[in-house]
Image (cartoon, rainbow, N blue to C red; front, side, top):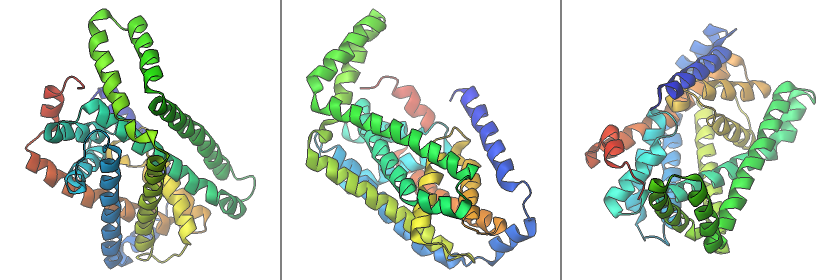
Length: 336
């Protein structure tokens, strides 16, 4: 990984950690950690893995026009991707799972990455929907002139523009593949050196193959519905973990928290989204009158519960593959 990205992530995480822990009543924080009822993590983790299985099914569905691959095959690869995102910078797990899929099933990396980008676009649209549904209530709790609510609203508006713009672009590219190839080829011919054009042209064609599932309105609807189910299940984990702590908010509030916290993970930070996650989760809960120590204790425990089980399972599956990240990068130098 580029060193500047690594150090930038560390600096950003340090700033957010300072924001989260500054002026904190440490006694309240440690008390919430020590007195939490951790049995509630078990159903939370189980429902989370149901969501991961549905993610694997959604990916299998997106890859269907290219190759029919059973969900049971996609599930280990999906967990490896989560593990990679959690321990490597720059969401490198997405590339890692595309590499493994190529090794196991012969699907080109560029086509896999196209389906992965489509996943993330739909995830972003659903997360932003979670935010918008609950913004009016948050504004009432925090005051109409709250800077926090204003910042969240601005983030949601910019995020909506970005994700909807990307979704429209991908839908047009999928519906008009010949036109997309011609446009892409024009840029390749005019902007790239001659020695790179043939390879870039091949990548372009395979990338557009990865968008084939978007040519059907039924497929688009299915991907959207499964995306909603996935994020509702993840919110269910938030709900179960909440019961381990002495506070209560409704499910819609946790949907808002889920949307904002995951949007915050798009900010460059240290691997595992350390700092950004804790600071934003605490801020949302404090806006709902949850004591700061309890809010941060919940944020830390929830983050560990989201990070540790999937990372351990992904590491197990990666070890079974007999593949190291450096080896993957060295051997897969060309997208094909």
